[in-house]
Length: 327
Length: 302
Image 1 (cartoon, rainbow over the protein chains, first blue to last red):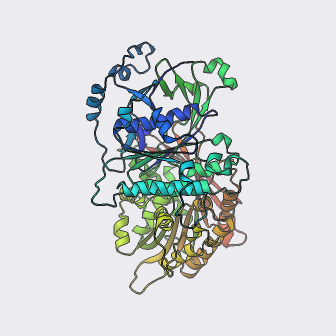
Image 2 (cartoon, rainbow over the protein chains, first blue to last red):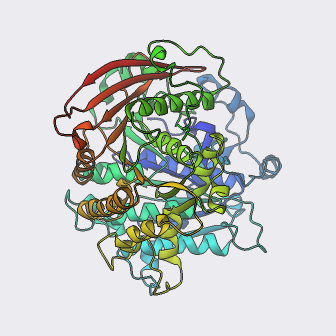
Image 3 (cartoon, each protein chain N blue to C red):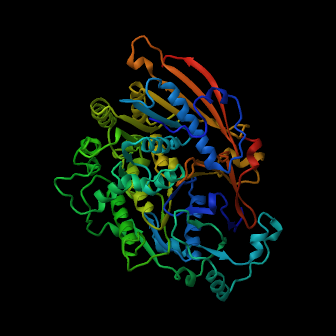
């Protein structure tokens, strides 16, 4: 088992998650890789200077943010993508280099085709420095802390945890000017929203408990309202969902239709594929269930064959062409 | 009334079957135009009595692909035809439809300005309902049912009825109701019977009373376990005059096949003893051209 690896997610069209859209990740069985992608998205946000909003019912967002991977600044990693021998210098990067490098990043323009890019490399064996973490503005939502506050919810039927979360997101978007409503606050920055394990029992939702849950609509209503908020603001959102626990497949079909991009991670841990020689270099599969259609007449007719991901010595890659023979 | 026939003229249509359109297409947009022109030509072939149908209910469905290109087509088609359009847009923002309509040569903002287009942006209405101020008593939100205070879609119907009611200064041609997409209502908690009731009331008002047309998109997944949605889709199919079904074909070795459009003209609905007409057109959207293959006409009872 590799103890460290670099994240570089090459899957998305345009190289990232488009502003105004939602990327939904169906968690792998133990949540290992989905958690990694979740942190990657947030780490990219810090490196790009975006604001963050982190929501969880499982871990306190402070803890999540302390465990983000450290960015790699040496350009050699970029040039030698895929080359196993490239992974050499892990020398500590000094903070002066960090400051110089990120000053040169272009500021995101507010346009419908803006992407929040996955453009950098990370060493997961190292934690992001606290100075870098503190360099952006971030907001957190930890459900168990929020429950103690009296909700000011309009009377409409939805799981109260979700309703509180929506209210919190809407408040930040509005107060920080991400929706362009306040002419005083000319906000040109992007808000990256990360929501962990939505749908799990910790959010008070029963969809993971039975195939006939009492309230099958809260999750989809939540996604619809969230979609409205995302579309009218400079924000991009990643949500992980423990889809393997949701027994009612109709709900997952609806969740997929309400998301812009849906990617399912399937790890080989504990499955028969782990010992299958065909898959010996890989650690899991990526299933693409939905691709974004924003602003285009028809969506991209791209290969939706099974993609695989693997940990190489220093690289976590998603590869597209290797499994053509196996499909 | 001249419909939009795009690049492929109506007379040339039969000879396109099996022929490649070897034009030098600048890109995806041109391929899309050709695909849509073909769809329009075909649907005109089916309706032989009028240039465009009156009082008809058209169902758009998609499986394994995104059928919303059909919605974009009908929106720009009816606006260009001079019809008054009420568009219940539940899934995407106004700017999304606007940007695409621009590619098809129509300005939604201008259409709204001159009163030709009434646009209900579901996402925005929902936000207004959830986060907005207390609503005025005389003006319930069209998406009232979201608040749980009522389980029917009466407010949505009222919105449609009022939008398309003819008013004194109007010189628009027949009214059109366009919905994208109906399946979303189920995700928001509406029961299938409430959605079917809504459609029924709309048909009475728009198709029968106003002699207008309705075009509705529903999604359906292959081997879907969403029973409510399947019920909705099957019910709607039974009562549709025309069904345009865009199906993505399973990806195999032939990477270029995009899908097929199955066009069903429900003649049996209106005339006893008539059989329905089903045409299937497969298409390939390659880098620079679109290839159509008509799989032949067949009278089939649905």
